[in-house]
Image (cartoon, rainbow, N blue to C red):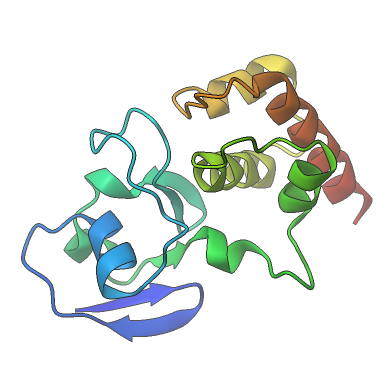
Amino acid sequence: MELIVNGTPYRAEVEPGMPLLWVLRDELGFMGVKYGCGIAQCGACTVHLDGVATRACQIRAEDAQGVEITTIEGLGTPEAPHPVQMAWITHQVAQCGYCQSGQIMAAAALLAETPDPNDEEIDRAMDGNLCRCGTYPRIRAAIREAAARLREV
């Protein structure tokens, strides 16, 4: 099967029905996509499929063929981080960091769709992205800052 990940085509031999999460991590080496719960309840495995935040643990890899898949590795670079990544650093959102790639991917998808979200829109978009460390106030502040940065561009 061929998948387009972060703008690059990849070929992988996978079992039918294998979740996209395992193909991205185990077959292609995109370790920023985390396994959390396996039932789409925690958000650690969030990636973008054609720009839409999607839980990779619940999508069969074969259903992602022909779709642009973006992982945290493709969102920004160390030299040119995405505004959400910059805001995460500014607000020191991460504590343990495990959920952060999923949180960042969900936030980036929100801002692509809603450039100036209010608290309710942020909460709705981030609902189900769990942070065991409880950094939700910093997450909201970082999203607001990233939204402001993106509007300046």
